[in-house]
Image (cartoon, one colour):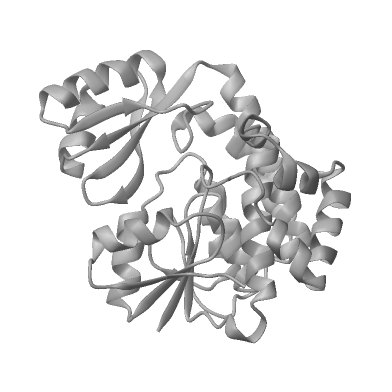
Length: 293
């Protein structure tokens, strides 16, 4: 069974999507449509922008979404997923690829999500940190014992967990985690505490937009970040998508469940190969493929 997975924020690079634009009429049409929907020329930034310009939240999230979704459309009949999943933002790409959301509605939601998260980041000084080489339970316990907001946010693969929260609480957690034997506990260059309670204002804002959007039954199950199990019911998909902003991304568990349910290969659709690497860390023998045209 073919599992298709879609990357999240951090996979962007200058020149992304240009080969799609130059080689496919389908891609060209969708990129032009995206410029109209967003109200600015995102293609110009994707194709020619600096790393700095691409890091702007209002650009990063739609850019990665566009690269992934347009690539899945260009693949045409060869794109035959039996199951899909996306890492954080990538969940929106997975929903379009599986037919649960249409391109236009999803892009508008991604844009609203990016701006709402940016606003939430500006309300309070917050950050994230990557913790390597410790059991999940050890990291969770340290987070619970710290005064202030700090939570497990991204379960990326065994031995790699990202924590999220207030700056002082994150710094304290990193100190203790190193004492507990973490190979690394490194504060990340991100704008805020994604997938933590500090994203509550963004969750509320996005909830209204998601509720007002039409979702369909996907043509294959989606393994969502919040539940990690196969979901096909549109109402449940909506509920999980709303919860996602303040809940952890349970990527390790999602990949394990996809394997348990029969996945024999994982194809990464979008910029970079980060997810392929994470899948290999869950099961070294699993076949991973990077989609390209």
